[in-house]
Length: 133
Image (cartoon, rainbow, N blue to C red; front, side, top):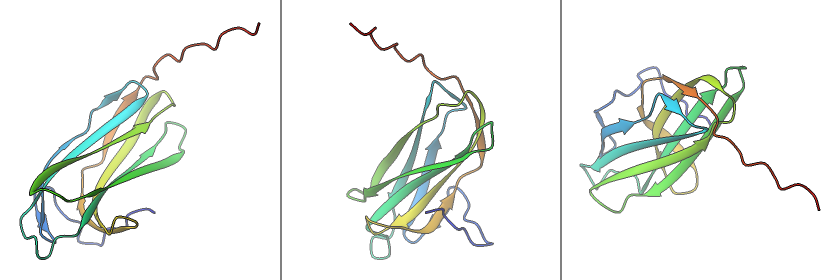
């Protein structure tokens, strides 16, 4: 499910629904997999969602849209959420990450829309299968 931010998109480092975005780690180069991490803090437990979802959308150099997401239970006052996505097509990918509220099953409202970025992908070498006997 694609996040659908409203016209008043949330800003980084802001607080929404009892959650504060502390930081984002998203590389600008990848070896065939992209690892994105966000750090969040629960600042108002009474209004915070039970889970957060990290959603990542990318567009390949050929224009193909892809997405992946992970949901994580909020168990501590500060925690990081990480996501690793395969990126097989070499070249410059357009990437956007969102931190969303979640109930653990479905992705809910966008809490934080991270700045769109680009990532240069150089696929890692895949070992050749052994020759048939």
